[in-house]
Length: 154
Image (cartoon, one colour):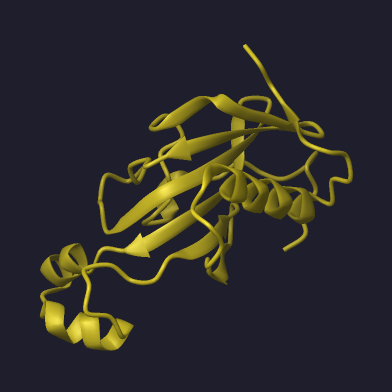
């Protein structure tokens, strides 16, 4: 996905079932400036639509002029919640997802105004440094930003 940071429309977060709530789980010391954009790292944010069908250990929302235009997240489908919501047995879902646990594999996603792009399985370290690099590189690549992200200190 390649987008223009100056013209990218805002996202209607309610069109995506797993869009992270940009006001939940804000890590105040993890706010970054990427070109004209402000990127905020979130830890364990809720889903914006109120349904908790996925677990989101981390996400980063991207704003231009205080308007959310992109989000990158790490997500796992909550098979128990899906089982209950869809009326399918948990064992059936576990077989479909090829797991014995209650969550699917951890995957990365990029949300824009019209697209939810699956970045595939996230198999990097789950430390903050690795996650930050993954998110910021994804954002800079998406908007073709060549300058280094700069941390905003308060």
